[in-house]
Amino acid sequence: MALMDFIKKQFIDVIHWTEEGDGVMAYRYPMQDFEIQTGAQLTVRDSQMAVFVNEGQVADVFGPGLYTLNTQTLPVLTYLKNWDKLFESPFKSDVYFFSTRLQLDRKWGTPNPITIRDKDFGMVRLRAFGLYSFKLVDPGKFYKEISGTREVYSVDDLDGQLRGLVIAGMSDLFGESGVPFIDMAANQVEFAAKLKTALEPVFDRYGLVLDAFAVQNITLPEELQKILDTRIGMNMLGDLERYTQYQVATSIPLAAQNEGGMAGIGAGLGAGMGIGQAMAQSMTQAMQPGTAQPVATAAPVAGVSADDVVATLEKLHGLVGKGILSQAEFDAKKAELLGKLS
Image (tube, rainbow, N blue to C red; front, side):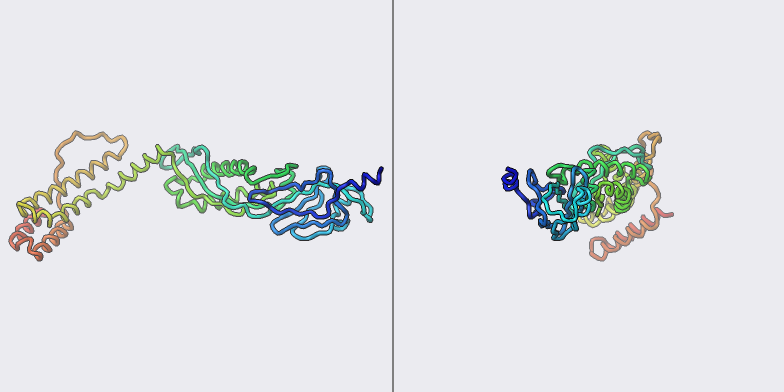
């Protein structure tokens, strides 16, 4: 009867794992009631490692290569089972394969805004997004801390934990950096390098190494972004006076071709300069917090600068060369403009 039971037993003489699909980090070789035959062949391919686990305890670890299983190749397992040097009988042990390939294009992002104190805006809420890559380097640690006895453990199973670690580190980094939001885009590479350094010990605890880490985007919530866009637009109005003067000067050739010729150019030029100055001053006052707004009155026309007069005269002289203005008209406008400087 004992002989028949022995014959019915199934033995494993080749152990290997061919990865099917992406994302599997740990795979338990299907043993069931099988036993590993003495002298069986173990194949561990590049980008893999194999671990023998005896009664829940990690024993021997194998890197890429072809192995004949015996007391020489299984020293820890031999010691745990107290085998003698002959080691001729079959044995049972759990065998796990681990993928050591780089796990690329792993995305991270803040599910909720991170609240920090900003130098320019006070308390603000930020969102951040990016990519990272990692790989498994210590299957013993990974088995004990993460995958355990599961038949299959994937990258997706690990993503939630890793993203949580990244976001926690990001919150601390932003809060302690003191970098204003306006300057954060220019410091994304530095942020990524500091966060990678801070996360490396955490990844190491799980038998992983953080290969690369990138911060791709840092944004404000939509309502705060609108406020920032408004502020940027107000800052751009600082050159409104000069822009208005330019528009008036470039419109002279068109005015000369319309009915009435050059009759209204002088008034238009002075009014344009005055309106530009008044609007710029009004915008500047509006941007100052706590400043009382004056009652609307007619804005006085400020004096015209010498540079403005010279620029206008050059344009008018060009119109003389094109035959749009006569020399007499030019001389009259020249005298009028020069009179504004006195």
